[in-house]
Image (cartoon, rainbow, N blue to C red; front, side, top):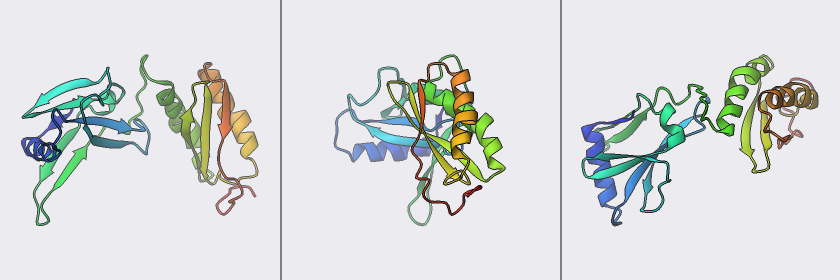
Length: 193
């Protein structure tokens, strides 16, 4: 799982002590796990802000809550604090945060991102384009954003309907609809104009 070095624990404990909040902890999670834009985060977690399915770890004088859906991306992760001439820096290394990993328990968002980054985006990369997931609504509507050579491209409707929508809906039948929220009026990098 995640390793917090002794110097990392000391630094985090000092930060938590300065918060003047009884029972404050940290929460570790990965935003956009399994994608190239994954970001590993450590945040203050006041009592009651933790999630019911978070995994709790006890450290030297504080607790850490690990987000359940982020656990797979935090394998082999390491938090460290290194002193330097400016005071020091907390570093988080999570070598598996960008690795696509899908299990039976993976969320719909993770499954969509897996398909986008492993099946759809490699084909679009030849045109300098990519697609990213913006959100999945409670009604099963998937909201996507086109970028690079796909933004403003004259063939975006064909790509969306015949490529992206067909692929996602065939593999994930719980999706009801796909929407594109890209501003296609900007055509500076468009592959087809």
